[in-house]
Length: 629
Image 1 (tube, rainbow, N blue to C red):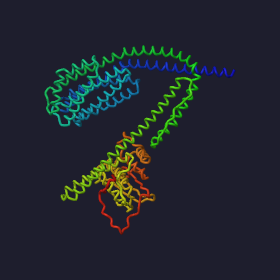
Image 2: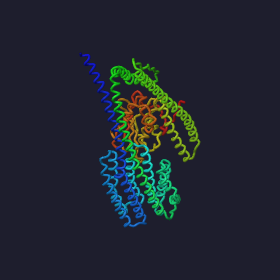
Image 3: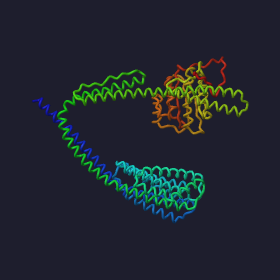
Image 4: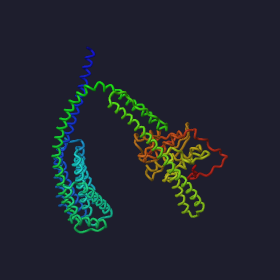
């Protein structure tokens, strides 16, 4: 009796599970397809409440922008400008009234509408600057441009629709409308003689407009293209192109304003006609989507009934086999694959056993084989990635070694030229070339570090840390800003001198790059209980605590080099060099508002000062290095 009850409970459970699943699936498919139909129907509503009033507002702002440019040029009157401002205010009020109806739409549309409101609120300030004479023509035109760009962003967001053909054509029509906007910008800039800056901006606008039109004409379907082609092929458009070339050359052709006004109106008519045609296309498509939704709903209901019967027959057996397959798959995902990837990163050879699951059905066997295939594919991908990483490292290393050889020869030749030169100016030029060669050598060493190898320069005897700091300062471009303060006479072990110079040079270069050019970069050093500390302090803008924490984490635990993260190459090189010699690099805020990099060199690498009886060589601004190649 108890076993029968258990069997019945299993049967009921097997019945309810597929039934509930199919009901959910049926509801999802019906809801999705119905929502597609409603969205297509809303396309026409959005055209009436958002896109069309936005087009009208864009047109009025374009006219007000032109009238403002005329006033600033001295060819227009305030009466005409006041008329256009009134028309813009009317169009703005109409846009606000109609767009308020769209606030129950998606969050993206509502956000974009609010962005347009924000830009429209700046209109009074733009007008006030023009009236007070505080704005020149370029500034006024750019201010109006920002409002129009916000309106075009709204166009692009509203044009998003699941029907790909309608969306593609709508996007192209918007591009054509923006080409007309670029034409009106040209019109406002080229009123009368132009300055060099105005001609430069004018040339950019002409190139962008021509590119947009050429690209859009090739993507429009025939019914939308005919109107656009007739406009582009018209004598007025060709005359306008010749005038553009004359303006770019510095001339001021007659009839420019009349020609562009005529073309702007023709563009407006063409865009409105194309947009209305797209709006009309959406409605029949939505009907077809609704019919498809009903058909899919009926089909899903029939399949649901069939699936319930099939589930009653196969459910019990499949549940056991699928459970075993699930356990095997989890073992692969959680244990085998992570272990294989870890071994591959260490360069070890791996073997992957086949994933086998005892099954009485072909389907479960196929799924098991599929998991085995996925497993092998993942391993092959990991192997390929490791080989690619090694190959990239080898390329870096070979290129860097070759560069090192050439740079070494170049430095020998420069040194010989310096010995033979007598003119102070020639010596100064040779010193600059020598400094440039030093910087190039450091970049070549950076490639070697990326490859995982060791740079080729080193010293056989300890070097005073003061000379190490000076050598690092000499390897940066803006070395004149670097001040190396006196420090104790401790010396650095010769084998790591080259790496420490490279490490400190990277930190000094970052300090010079990210601080104002008139501020100094201070390098100081002192002995500590655990070794020797070098500090590199700049007086830049500093970094947020979060950013400092992130960089310190990278410096403490060097990540694998990512080719896509090459903008942080210096940080990666520093972290690699520091980890190689157990050096600790920490970033913190500076009292001057900038950033201080603290380099703690362990005591094992620091030697006592050279005895006083020895004669020291005079310090040189740059340290000669002979590559080991």
